[in-house]
Each structure stands twice: as C-alpha cells, then as structure tokens.
Image 1 (tube, rainbow, N blue to C red):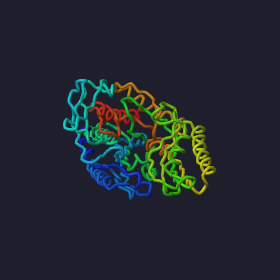
Image 2 (image 1 turned 60 degrees about the horizontal axis):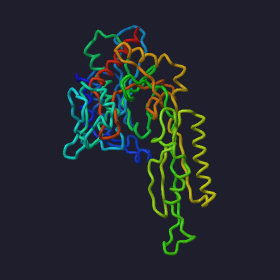
Image 3 (image 1 turned 90 degrees about the vertical axis):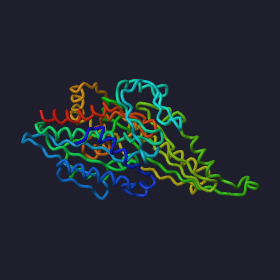
Image 4 (image 1 turned 180 degrees about the horizontal axis):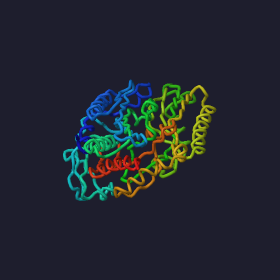
Amino acid sequence: MYTTLEHFLKYVKYDTQSNEAAGLAGKVPSTPGQWELAREMEKELNERGFKDVSVSEYCYVMGTLPANTDRKIPAIGFITHMDTAAEASGKDVKARVVKNYDGGDIVLNEALNVIMSPADFPFMKNYVGDDLVVTDGTTLLGADDKAGMAEVMGAIDWIIAHPEFEHGDIKVAFTPDEEISELASHLDIEKFGADFAYTLDGGDIGEISYENFNAAGATLKIHGRSVHPGSAKGLMLSAVMMGCEFLSMLPPYETPATTEKYEGYYHCLTFNGDTENAELHFIIRDHDMAKFEGRKKFFADCVDWMRRKYGAERFDLEMHDQYFNMKEKVKDHMDIVELPVRAMKEVGITPFFKAMRGGTDGAALSCRGLITPNIFIGGHNYHGRFEFVSVQVMEKASEVVIKILELAGK
C-alpha cells in the first residue's frame, strides 16, 4: 500500500497530455499515454480487491470496492481524470518535494533561471511549513488531476488497511481527455452504479463547486482571395485581415483576462492563416443560461455581418455546445453537496463554495443524471511549469474522502 504522495509521484511520471486535434477528430483517448496509465490503474484496483474492474474501449477505468457491512449505505463514486493539459509538456515530469517550505523563492531550474516566487504568486505564503511538490521548471506537474487520483487511491489504501472501517460500495472511475472537453461522455453511468459521486478536480483546500460555466466551442473558417500585392487594390481579400476584423467586433473587456467570478467571456484559442485561408477556434462561456444563449447569438450575428459585407461563401461557422451548468441539476439534491461540507468541518477544514470558471466531468455527469459536485485537490498554477501542490493538503483531501464515506454510513 502507498501513501497519497507515493501514488502522486508515480502517476506524474506517465505522459498523459491530451491532444485537442485528435479529440476533435473523434479519437478517444486522444493520446496513447493515457492507455498506459489506465492499465496501471486497472492493475492497482485489482491488487486492492476491487470487483468488476474494467477498462472500456474508450479508456475509462472503473471498479467497485464492495461494502463490508450489511447496513444500507449509499454507493458513492469518486471520479478523477488521467489526462493533463496541452498548454505545457507533460513528458518526463521531474517532480521534487520541497520540505518544510520557508516562504521564500523556490528555484525550479537554476540552469534556465526558472524561479517560482511569492512576489508573483502570493498564495505561496499560505504554505509555509508544508512540503510542496514542484516541477523542474520545464514541464507542468500534473496535479490536475493526478493529485485527485492519488488522493482517492491514498484514501482507498487507508480503508483497506483498516478493515474495521465500515463502508458501502465505493465506486472509482478514472477518465480520459477531460482537458479537451471529453467530459466523461463515454462513462457508462448504469454500469458505474453509484447513487451519487464526487469529482476531485478543484483548487484550494476547502473548495466545493456545484456551479460551473455553460460552454460552447466555435470554429470560424475564412476564405479569402489572394492577388499579387502589387496589383491587389480592390481585388485582394485577406483572410487574416478579415479574421482580425471579426475579432475586433467581440467585446474587448469580455475575455478570460478581463473577467472573474460570474462574468462570462469570448476567448480565441487559436488563429492560423494566410491571405487565402484562415481558421479561428473559440470558446464561449457564461454561468447564466440566458446570457449564454445571448452570447452565442451575438457571435453568430457578427459572423452574419461579415457575410453580408464580404460574401456568405467566405465564412463557415461551426458552433456546438460542450457542457452546461450543473447547478440546474444539483440544486434539487443539496444533501449531496452538504455531505463534503460536513466532512471538511469534521477534519478541521473550512469549506467554501466557488463557482467554477470551467467544467469538470462532474458537470456533464450531473446533467446526465449522476449528481457529481466537485471538491478540492489543493493544487495551484495548473497547466504550467509553476504548478505545485502541498503534500499536507493532498493528505487532507484523502481524509475528506474517508470522512464522506464515514458520514454516509451514519
């Protein structure tokens, strides 16, 4: 059996970075490394006596630790994702533990002069005295969501080591491609068999989320007309310039960099092109459904305006919904939200609610009928080389999992 930290240090060695292009092409999982970690998790579940362990054709790992009591206790699921984000490399992650952090700068990579400083990240000061797991400054760490995986497995190892601890069926699932909005779309809820579940995929210690963005993706393809620049007046139509003109129509103060809390946004993820052709990828977000629908309509209206100006044949728009705000489903099941609130209080954590400015597997699963709020994993600076997580917070998250199971049996 392993500690939560030992699980984490093992999982981050797997390169499971997802790939959006492969995902858009319908490949699940989008990268082969996720299969490798899936097989490891299948092995770990089998070694721990889980029943009905399976790895689906889409790389979803599921299993059940059977109840050890005849008392009627809900079957509770814990769900985490195996992939890491595309913004920074997840290959050859070299994690190290900074013991008893002193509150100062941490040199991640002396040769490259990569320094993580509380001058840039003031919340580092909250972890003075903790042991911090950091990167070597060349990759992300993968706490999102391998810390969640480790916290669940750390809790499982404790439970197995304490057979006197009574619990109902414990359902565990590890999913692929959450970072590219697969969002557990191929998870067989009926086969999983949980009465309700939790994702461990949040942020700071004590965080609980049962609200998230409504989300859409959009691809705009622009077809220009290339003519020699020397004789282009009145003839050339630059796809790049038309793309820039379209971007200028979107509200400049409604971007990720200018919004917070419940404020929605438009975000251009990529813009590639030349005079002849350009392609722009967007995400559109808002917590409020009416505002979300309004954002999509405004976006489409801007495209229509460009079509009227330059010709309808020059603009191809594909827009699709990605996920919705789980609050609409969870609000009628607040007892499921209150369970981790009670658990955190009992283990000495102050819980707080936070509306997610993103989505989780749990958002999509809640909308499909499996109520799945999200709870903290304790990491910071996700998706980049300054990512870190506190060992003590990871251990607390494992403790919360155990306490949830204990309270559910009372």
